[in-house]
Amino acid sequence: MKFTKMHGAGNDYVYVNCFQETLPQDIASLAIQVSDRHKGIGSDGLILICPSETADAQMRMFNADGSESEMCGNGIRCVAKYVYDHGIAQQDHLKIETGAGILNLDLELTGQKVSQVRVNMGKPILASAEIPTLLPGNPPVNAELNLGEQKLEVTCVSMGNPHCITFVEEVNDHWVHVIGPQVEVHSVFPNRVNAEFIEVVSPAELKMRVWERGSGETQACGTGACASAVAGVLTGRSERNVLIHLPGGDLRLEWAGSDEVFMTGPAVEVYEGIWTGPH
Ligand SMILES: N[C@H](CCC[C@H](N)C(=O)O)C(=O)O
Image (cartoon, rainbow, N blue to C red; front, side, top):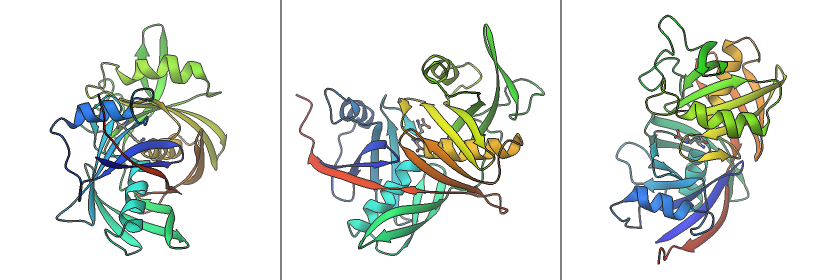
């Protein structure tokens, strides 16, 4: 199976062109195997670039534990780069079908290749089946999440996939590695959740680390950055246009007057290879 390794702000996935490749039946197992950083290719998950009847391509995204997510913000920028650079569609405006609907993307070229992508990520959802209201009468903004000894004040936003955002004084390993896994599997999130921890640098700048549902800490999360930008506005902490610093790079977020969230960031291809495993 031919694959391409790509990343967006350090959030790295194995990409397979399903216009050409045939996959095994059990995609969840394949995702677990290729993602393994010691016994596989090594990635935060597996992303399939598939034909679509309604858009230029369809994206399917699997976490490192094999679970499928509705959306991936860093992934969709890389899918757009792949679709353009590899000649599947060559307009500088693309439509990609996702589990969160069809999204519109604008490509920025350096030479003949895509270097940055601006994505209309659609409207945030403040309460949904994936993010039930945390407690009766408790809205998803500044809600109380009970972790036993500790109570967190969180804001829950879905970008098609669910996010739980906590604003903290200092984003450190304790938040990400100790609190993150507890938030991910908290019983108020029946489908689990991605957990973001945000430090406000200024109203125009946030620092973020993420514990992702199904993949653990990653260097960046596009949908998480969108959800965090929305949470910053809803809680009066940040402006509608913010730069978010992540361990793997920066993302620009705008929550426009139209209520849609626009995300701009890099997309990088690293190498191509042939998956022959596992043996
Ligand atoms: N890293 C991805 C999100 C993956 C989300 C996934 N972990 C989930 O289960 O929803 C992003 O850039 O948006």
